[in-house]
Length: 432
Image 1 (cartoon, rainbow, N blue to C red):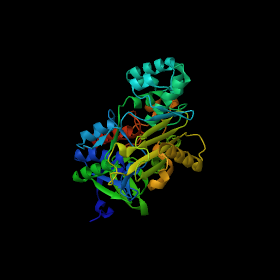
Image 2: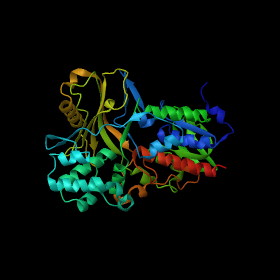
Image 3: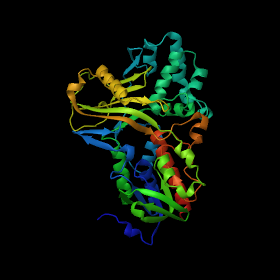
Image 4: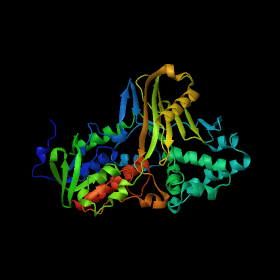
C-alpha cells in the first residue's frame, strides 16, 4: 500500500527530509533511531541521486567512477549505523602519460626511485612529499590555493605537475588556481580508495532498508516547491499545492534547488551565496566490454591533460559475466572553461584506444555523460576552504542543510555523510 499525503492531515512530523540520496537517507536513519518521526521526500522515482547504480546488459554501472576512502568519514559512519559493505582497494599499478610518453605510475616509494619520469633532484623532492604529506597540518592551508602552495613548496615544475595530478585524482577538481590546498591535501591523506562490490546502490539499499525498519516514511515522485515558516511549525509545500508540516526540515538538495524553495526566507539566508556556488564537473564515458584486449592495462592518469582511465571491475564485482570489464574513462573539467562535448568525447575514446586497442569491437554497452556533477561546489581557498562552507544549521530556525557542499568536514561523499550526521544530531536536540 503506497503512502498518501492524506495520512499527514493534522500531523506535525519531527522532521521532513528533502532528498533521497546518501545525505537524506543517512540523516533520516540517525533521526529515526532517536525515536523521532521522519518523512523523506524524493522528487524523482528512484532513490540515490548521484549514487545510483544501473544494470546495463548484465553489468553494474555507477554514474562515473566512485570510491570511498579507507580513512574517510563514510565508512566510519556506515559502520556506526551497522551497515557493512563489501569492497576492495585497487592495486598500486598503472601508467602515467606525459608529453605523449607512457611511464609506470610512481605511486610507491620503490616505483618512484626506479621511475624514468623524474630526474634525481625531482625524485628527492617527491620523496620528501611522499614521506611527509600525512603530517601536513591542512587547517593552516585552507585559504591557500593548491597552486600557491605548490609554488612555495617545490622547485621543479614537473614535481608540482605530478602532485596536481594526484590532487585531481583525489578531489575530481581541475581548478588548482582556485581550490584550497588544505582541502586537497586532506583528501590525499585519506588512505586507499575502496571500490564497492555491486556498486554504490548497495549504500542506498542498505540505508533504505534500515530507515524503513526504523519507521521512516519514504515517498518518491514528490517535488518540494517551497518551505515556509520556522521552528516549531514549518510548512513544506509539495506539487499540486499540497502541504505537510514539521517541526524541522532538512534539505539535502543542491545549493540552487535549496535556494529556490526558500523564497519566504531570502532575508534570513544568503540565497545569492547558494546560487553562486560552482559545481565541480567531469565528462565521463562508462564502458562495458566483453573482455579486455590488454588485460594488464587497468589504470592510467595523464599529467599534462586532465584524463583518467580505470577498469573498476578489475577490483570490484560489477558484472554477472566473469569476462565482462566495466571501465570508466573521465576528463576533469575546469569550472570556468567553455566545454566542447564532442572534443571531450573524442579524447575519451582516444584514451580508450590507447589503453585497450580494438575495444570498439568488444562493446557491450557504452554511455557518455558530458557534464556529470562530481561535487556541488568547488572548495575555494579565497572563501577559507572547507571552513567557508555553510553550516548544517541555517539562520532559519528549524531549517537545516546537508550535502557535499555543507559543513567543515571532508570533501565529496565524506562531506555528505559528515554533514548529514551533524544536521541530524542538531535536529534531534531541538525536537524534544
